[in-house]
Length: 343
Image (tube, rainbow, N blue to C red; front, side, top):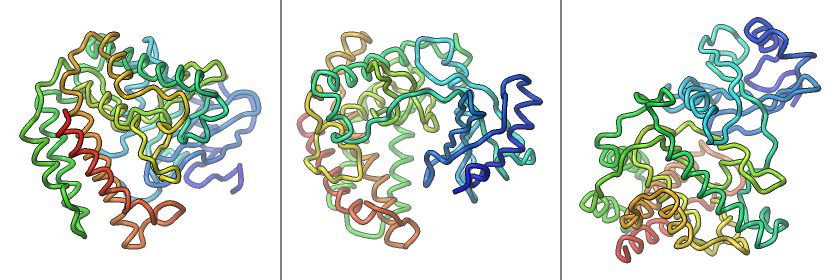
């Protein structure tokens, strides 16, 4: 892959746009590489030899505008940048695909932040138990900071529709499940129905990240969180959905080769109970219904994984690990049902 022509990004046109909109920012020819691609938005690292930036654009080809909204991602990091929430500095939003820098798509540019997104227990192992524990506790503390932001004060009062948030989420993921049905999945309809019957009363709405976990933040060499990334699912809603997802990812699956994050297996990783207690103490929120939110996270991930498995069976998704996704779905359903029974 040529650094002069990464797929989906025209560096010459990008340089021209930056020179027009942010004169003096770039001091040399741009090179770039694709950092992350696939089902989600495409992420590029771009440099002029001195400074580095990140460019985000939708996947190549046709996508639902609501699922990959560059303006939305740029808006939320722009709103949060002046707060205590660590996000990259936004540089530029281009909503005109005809500009050609990201052919056929809107995109945005932000500062490059040095740090590591930890996805597996093996990646965390060199940190050792004490540093691993500190990094995960920092993840909780940073979530508290995010949920402490007053949406109206940062211009995000209309960023979502908090009323009926949980009911809409449950219906949305139920429809996603129906769209991927191609085999019998014992217990998934029971899990969905039980979640609907036990819908909790939401606390005051906050900015919700929607996919908050260790591999969606950058950890610096000092073990501090330098930036929260991947805001494509962010909205205004129930903050405990973020906590439930974090708790779900903190329960070891006992599957070291799992294609899903295995950071919970790392030595020193705090227990789910400790994370819940820390969030409750620092946020002041009532977390007595956290079992529901954790079970909902198991359900949501089961639906996402089933969708990936369905596309894999159709030959639409290829790559390492996809052949094992289908086996994970019943595991997630089982955890969801158990969590509701014990909650």
